[in-house]
Length: 191
Image (cartoon, rainbow, N blue to C red; front, side):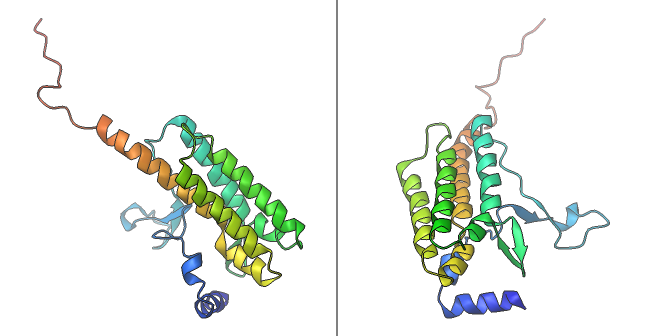
């Protein structure tokens, strides 16, 4: 019932496009395909979404850390069917809470900047604009805090970082795993 109220509220205020995450609504969990289900699982069961294996260890470690922190800040708790995190709870404290939540988001951005080569300027600006938007919305009393919980800037920044790393290393993985041609293969040695 509460989900219907949230959807109704979002459509009436035209915030549904602002809150939408893109093609995947949950970057942490995925639905298990029917052929992989165990006998005790029902259709629609979920499992943790795995990070791509072709990302180098250092960047994978940074991505995993950002994923963990973003989950804690935006999705850790469930309240009436709505996933909220510690940033949403801290944001309820007038004025100071929004500054503290912004500092946590900036800390997450600094962690994301530790990838090899750093963040590209355009991606950094997108992440910073998510943080500024989250902070600005949070300054509005009560309604801003509710919208802030729905906006989930840390989750958005994690998704941006993951998309960047997948795009960056997917090309390298395709080049290194291309099949050998007749000319690339080592000649057979006769003994």
